[in-house]
Length: 134
Image 1 (tube, rainbow, N blue to C red):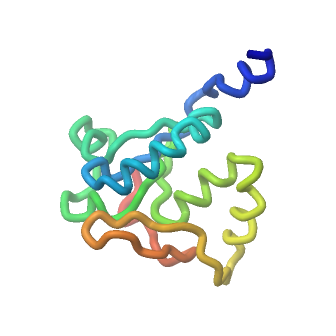
Image 2 (spheres, helix red, strand yellow):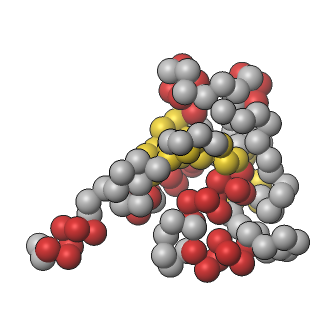
């Protein structure tokens, strides 16, 4: 393995936690498919159920599985489409798409928002918002 390959596999300092529905197989498989990509950029995966039990995330039980969330280390919470955009902004090849779909009035689909109770919903910018901030 070359030095460049080793450097590309090293995880960066933690920027945020990607919180997902760990009880839903599709969501679990999908986030773990991207685990190495996001870990290299400073993101850690954690299921919403564990985050709630540990007190990391204060969300009413009825809304816990509404959206995928990104909990930033230095405060702040991104939900739904904004969570996908936040992560994409940290991946060089996804950044142009994040910029495009992050524009006001964007009509493009920026990702599948994982909604625990209803399956997959197509999330448009501004459609899915956090119900409470951590």
